Image 1 (cartoon, one colour):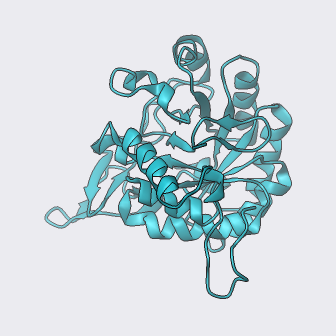
Image 2: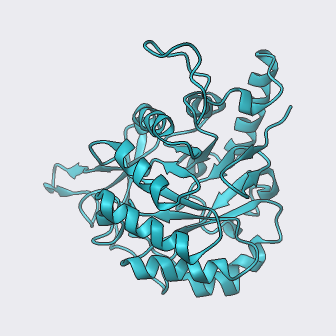
Image 3: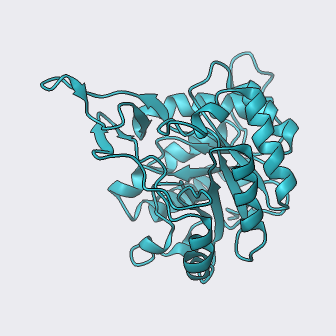
Amino acid sequence: MNLGVEIGAGLRLKNPLLVASGTFGYGVESAAFVDLASLGGIVTKGLYLTPRGGNEVPRIVETPSGLLNAIGLQGVGVHAFVRELLPRLSAHDTAILVNVCGDSVDEYAEVARVLGAVPGVAGLEINISCPNVKKGGLAFGSDPGMTHQVVRAVREATRLPVIPKLSPNVTDITVFARACEEAGADALSCVNTVLALSVDVERRRPKLAFGTGGLSGPAIRPLAVRLAWQAARAVKIPVIGIGGIASAEDALEFLIVGCRAFQVGTANFADPGVHGKILAGLEDYLHRHRFTDINQVVGSLEYPGLPGRQQPP
């Protein structure tokens, strides 16, 4: 059975499972626990031009069926990544996608230029929608015009596949999906975390030092599936589904509504072996439904009001 998928021009994955940015470090930290070559790809922690310290602690809070974080995009910076971490990652037979951050359009473009000039990077995920930083990601991902501007600048700065990561914290995600497509994006990641707040009732203060944070995990999966489905119907470029995936059944929801691949995030913290279980579950599903190719599942949703099978974009 074939689990291979194509995500835009020039990006082919051995299977549709990627690990989500911010939940797997830079990949090298997990090599002792996970066979990185078994993954379709790794999306690294977000990178600015220079190192970042992130937000004050506490930065993570557990919530019912989820996780609330306000890490603040702590990172080593793109130059240290290229010099020290990328060579170690490139030794593993898996696609390396780098999550790109910026406080300005020029910074996004410059990080993309740096990464486009070195071997070993398979694509760029553009973080235009992070809800737990004071500037940059939240603003760019909340305005279609600014979204278009950032994606266009990155597109002009590199030949690597460009994959903007969309925010769920908008009124109509299809507007942002189309803006990215028009700006030259090769694919979309849908979606980032949901802006949320958890309160310590005894102290009457937010549990996170930053205040609000990004909610992830099973609690957001139905919302994420709906948004990914809407985005996939709105554009012709591929969509990568993200949000609360912890099993093959969870992943299949995203594939069936039209996503070509998916990312596992919060589940990485709970079960380092979750990736093998998900891939085995996908193969079992194909066998039981007499499919020979995972792409036969993509966009197979039968939905009231649609004429039969929904074709993938």
